[in-house]
Amino acid sequence: MKKVSQIILSKYSPLMSVDTTLIGSDGKEIKTPRVNSLCRCGESKYKPHCDGTHATIGFDGTREDSEKAKPEVYEGKEITIVFDRYLCMGAGYCGELESVFGTHEKPIYEPDGASPEEIIATIKKCPSGALSYILNGKHEKDYFETTQIVVEQNGPLHCQGEITLIDDQESDKVLPGCDHFTLCRCGDSKKKPVCDGSHLDNGFTG
Image 1 (cartoon, rainbow, N blue to C red):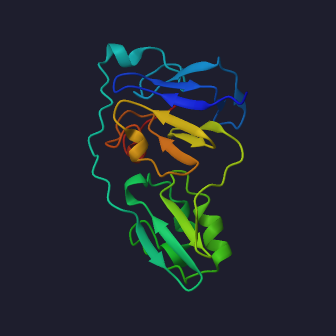
Image 2: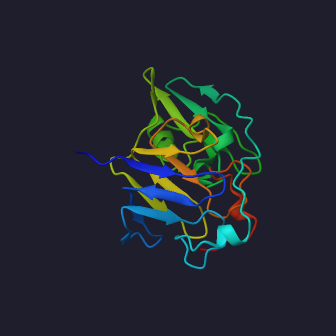
Protein backbone atom coordinates (compact mmCIF):
# COMPACT_ATOMS: atom_id res chain seq x y z
CA MET A 1 0.00 0.00 0.00
CA LYS A 2 1.32 3.42 -1.00
CA LYS A 3 2.10 5.73 1.92
CA VAL A 4 0.24 9.05 1.92
CA SER A 5 2.47 12.01 2.70
CA GLN A 6 0.82 14.58 4.93
CA ILE A 7 1.54 17.74 6.90
CA ILE A 8 -0.82 18.17 9.85
CA LEU A 9 -1.00 21.19 12.14
CA SER A 10 -3.19 23.39 14.30
CA LYS A 11 -2.91 27.14 14.93
CA TYR A 12 -0.74 26.47 17.97
CA SER A 13 1.23 23.38 16.99
CA PRO A 14 4.39 22.64 15.03
CA LEU A 15 4.22 21.06 11.60
CA MET A 16 3.64 17.32 11.91
CA SER A 17 5.19 15.66 8.88
CA VAL A 18 3.84 12.16 8.17
CA ASP A 19 5.52 9.69 5.81
CA THR A 20 7.45 12.45 4.03
CA THR A 21 11.14 12.49 3.18
CA LEU A 22 13.00 15.47 4.66
CA ILE A 23 15.92 16.97 2.74
CA GLY A 24 18.30 19.33 4.53
CA SER A 25 19.64 22.59 3.14
CA ASP A 26 22.81 20.67 2.21
CA GLY A 27 20.79 18.48 -0.17
CA LYS A 28 21.14 15.35 1.98
CA GLU A 29 18.27 13.37 3.43
CA ILE A 30 17.66 13.83 7.14
CA LYS A 31 16.65 10.55 8.75
CA THR A 32 13.40 11.04 10.66
CA PRO A 33 10.71 8.90 12.26
CA ARG A 34 7.49 8.26 10.34
CA VAL A 35 5.84 11.16 12.19
CA ASN A 36 8.18 14.10 12.64
CA SER A 37 7.66 17.53 14.26
CA LEU A 38 9.07 20.52 12.37
CA CYS A 39 9.48 23.99 13.86
CA ARG A 40 7.35 26.84 12.55
CA CYS A 41 7.66 29.36 15.38
CA GLY A 42 11.20 30.24 14.31
CA GLU A 43 12.72 29.76 17.76
CA SER A 44 13.67 26.07 18.06
CA LYS A 45 17.29 25.41 18.95
CA TYR A 46 17.24 22.29 16.79
CA LYS A 47 15.85 23.62 13.49
CA PRO A 48 14.34 22.29 11.34
CA HIS A 49 13.05 20.09 14.17
CA CYS A 50 10.68 21.32 16.87
CA ASP A 51 11.98 21.44 20.45
CA GLY A 52 8.76 22.61 22.09
CA THR A 53 9.68 26.30 22.19
CA HIS A 54 6.38 27.25 20.52
CA ALA A 55 4.58 26.29 23.72
CA THR A 56 6.78 28.33 26.03
CA ILE A 57 6.62 31.51 23.91
CA GLY A 58 2.88 31.26 23.26
CA PHE A 59 3.19 30.91 19.49
CA ASP A 60 -0.02 31.71 17.62
CA GLY A 61 -0.16 30.49 14.04
CA THR A 62 -3.42 32.20 13.14
CA ARG A 63 -3.45 33.43 9.56
CA GLU A 64 -3.76 37.22 9.59
CA ASP A 65 -4.11 37.79 5.85
CA SER A 66 -6.73 35.51 4.33
CA GLU A 67 -7.99 37.72 1.50
CA LYS A 68 -6.92 35.77 -1.57
CA ALA A 69 -7.70 37.34 -4.95
CA LYS A 70 -8.07 35.38 -8.16
CA PRO A 71 -4.82 34.60 -9.97
CA GLU A 72 -3.74 37.13 -12.60
CA VAL A 73 -3.62 35.86 -16.19
CA TYR A 74 -1.26 37.31 -18.82
CA GLU A 75 -1.96 35.92 -22.27
CA GLY A 76 0.70 35.84 -24.96
CA LYS A 77 0.88 34.62 -28.53
CA GLU A 78 2.16 31.17 -27.55
CA ILE A 79 2.12 30.92 -23.77
CA THR A 80 0.00 32.37 -20.97
CA ILE A 81 1.51 33.27 -17.59
CA VAL A 82 -0.62 32.74 -14.46
CA PHE A 83 0.41 34.60 -11.31
CA ASP A 84 -1.14 34.00 -7.87
CA ARG A 85 0.10 37.09 -6.04
CA TYR A 86 -1.09 35.81 -2.65
CA LEU A 87 1.37 32.91 -2.75
CA CYS A 88 4.45 34.86 -3.82
CA MET A 89 7.24 34.57 -1.24
CA GLY A 90 9.79 36.73 -3.04
CA ALA A 91 12.23 33.98 -3.99
CA GLY A 92 13.27 36.13 -6.95
CA TYR A 93 13.94 33.47 -9.58
CA CYS A 94 11.53 35.16 -11.98
CA GLY A 95 13.85 38.18 -12.01
CA GLU A 96 16.42 36.07 -13.84
CA LEU A 97 14.25 36.53 -16.96
CA GLU A 98 13.95 40.30 -16.85
CA SER A 99 12.46 40.65 -20.34
CA VAL A 100 9.39 38.74 -19.14
CA PHE A 101 9.13 39.40 -15.41
CA GLY A 102 11.03 42.67 -14.98
CA THR A 103 12.77 43.39 -11.68
CA HIS A 104 11.72 43.36 -8.04
CA GLU A 105 11.40 47.14 -8.14
CA LYS A 106 9.58 47.18 -11.49
CA PRO A 107 7.84 43.85 -12.10
CA ILE A 108 6.20 43.16 -15.46
CA TYR A 109 4.47 40.13 -16.97
CA GLU A 110 5.26 40.01 -20.68
CA PRO A 111 4.63 36.50 -22.06
CA ASP A 112 6.01 37.49 -25.47
CA GLY A 113 9.28 38.75 -23.97
CA ALA A 114 11.12 35.44 -24.38
CA SER A 115 10.63 31.99 -25.85
CA PRO A 116 8.07 29.66 -24.22
CA GLU A 117 10.94 27.34 -23.30
CA GLU A 118 12.75 30.07 -21.38
CA ILE A 119 9.56 31.13 -19.62
CA ILE A 120 8.69 27.56 -18.62
CA ALA A 121 12.19 26.95 -17.26
CA THR A 122 11.95 30.12 -15.17
CA ILE A 123 8.44 29.38 -13.89
CA LYS A 124 9.51 25.92 -12.79
CA LYS A 125 12.05 27.53 -10.44
CA CYS A 126 9.24 29.26 -8.51
CA PRO A 127 8.99 27.23 -5.27
CA SER A 128 5.73 28.66 -3.93
CA GLY A 129 3.37 27.78 -6.77
CA ALA A 130 2.68 31.47 -7.36
CA LEU A 131 3.70 31.13 -11.02
CA SER A 132 2.34 28.62 -13.50
CA TYR A 133 1.59 28.62 -17.21
CA ILE A 134 -0.95 27.65 -19.83
CA LEU A 135 0.33 26.06 -23.03
CA ASN A 136 -1.80 24.58 -25.82
CA GLY A 137 -4.90 25.09 -23.69
CA LYS A 138 -3.56 23.12 -20.71
CA HIS A 139 -2.78 24.73 -17.35
CA GLU A 140 0.58 23.24 -16.32
CA LYS A 141 1.17 23.30 -12.55
CA ASP A 142 2.76 19.99 -11.54
CA TYR A 143 6.49 19.42 -12.00
CA PHE A 144 7.77 17.07 -9.26
CA GLU A 145 8.11 13.30 -9.51
CA THR A 146 9.58 12.94 -6.01
CA THR A 147 7.60 13.69 -2.86
CA GLN A 148 9.72 15.46 -0.25
CA ILE A 149 10.13 18.46 2.01
CA VAL A 150 13.27 20.49 1.33
CA VAL A 151 14.64 22.84 3.99
CA GLU A 152 15.84 26.16 2.59
CA GLN A 153 18.70 27.59 4.64
CA ASN A 154 17.38 30.67 6.48
CA GLY A 155 14.12 30.22 4.60
CA PRO A 156 10.90 28.22 4.34
CA LEU A 157 10.08 24.57 3.78
CA HIS A 158 9.69 23.63 0.12
CA CYS A 159 6.96 21.01 -0.12
CA GLN A 160 7.17 19.03 -3.34
CA GLY A 161 5.16 16.17 -4.79
CA GLU A 162 2.02 14.54 -3.46
CA ILE A 163 1.72 16.11 0.00
CA THR A 164 -1.64 16.79 1.62
CA LEU A 165 -1.85 19.67 4.10
CA ILE A 166 -4.45 19.36 6.87
CA ASP A 167 -5.11 22.05 9.48
CA ASP A 168 -7.83 23.92 11.38
CA GLN A 169 -7.86 27.04 9.19
CA GLU A 170 -8.84 25.45 5.86
CA SER A 171 -5.39 26.29 4.51
CA ASP A 172 -5.89 23.88 1.63
CA LYS A 173 -8.12 26.60 0.13
CA VAL A 174 -5.23 29.08 -0.12
CA LEU A 175 -2.70 26.60 -1.53
CA PRO A 176 -1.94 26.77 -5.25
CA GLY A 177 -3.62 23.48 -6.13
CA CYS A 178 -0.40 22.08 -7.55
CA ASP A 179 2.38 19.75 -6.42
CA HIS A 180 4.54 22.40 -4.72
CA PHE A 181 4.14 25.09 -2.09
CA THR A 182 6.19 26.76 0.65
CA LEU A 183 5.52 26.81 4.40
CA CYS A 184 6.73 29.44 6.87
CA ARG A 185 9.52 28.53 9.33
CA CYS A 186 10.31 31.96 10.75
CA GLY A 187 6.94 32.39 12.51
CA ASP A 188 6.24 35.87 11.11
CA SER A 189 4.28 35.18 7.93
CA LYS A 190 0.92 36.97 7.79
CA LYS A 191 -0.35 34.12 5.60
CA LYS A 192 0.48 31.18 7.87
CA PRO A 193 1.11 28.40 7.28
CA VAL A 194 2.35 29.52 3.84
CA CYS A 195 5.47 31.65 3.53
CA ASP A 196 5.09 35.33 2.60
CA GLY A 197 8.79 36.19 2.52
CA SER A 198 8.98 37.60 6.07
CA HIS A 199 12.20 35.64 6.68
CA LEU A 200 13.93 37.96 4.21
CA ASP A 201 13.36 40.93 6.50
CA ASN A 202 13.43 39.59 10.07
CA GLY A 203 16.91 38.07 10.14
CA PHE A 204 15.69 34.48 10.47
CA THR A 205 18.42 31.87 10.52
CA GLY A 206 18.22 28.11 10.59
